[in-house]
Amino acid sequence: MYALLYGLQTGIGEEILFRGFIGKRLVSKFGFLVGNIVQALIFAVPHILNFAATPILEITLCVLNALFIGYVFGYITEKIYNGSIIPSIMAHALINILSGLLLIFVF
Image 1 (tube, rainbow, N blue to C red):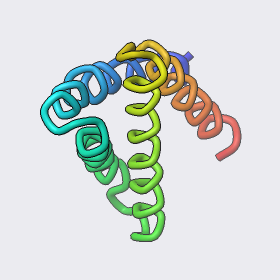
Image 2 (cartoon, helix red, strand yellow):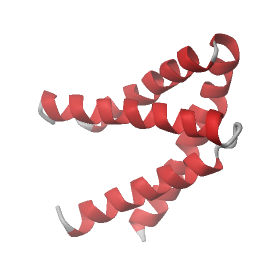
Image 3 (cartoon, rainbow, N blue to C red):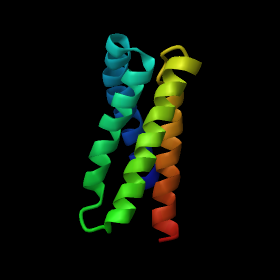
């Protein structure tokens, strides 16, 4: 149940903030490529805070992963679904739910 609630909460909240609010303003002001890269960078930065006592290599890989996912979700939102954040909310929630389940049952 926790994994489901966590996945939905962060998926919805982060997509509204990063793709719905920040991304749309940056893309509008700077164009798709620059705006999407900047929103992906902004999305990746808070993920550093998730790993207080983690080795630097793992932090780096997680931040690069967040940067890549942020860019892909921005692309999906702006180029494939004409500005709708619903698909990126669903994808983000699914990734977080699966990650939560892995943490609970595997690690």
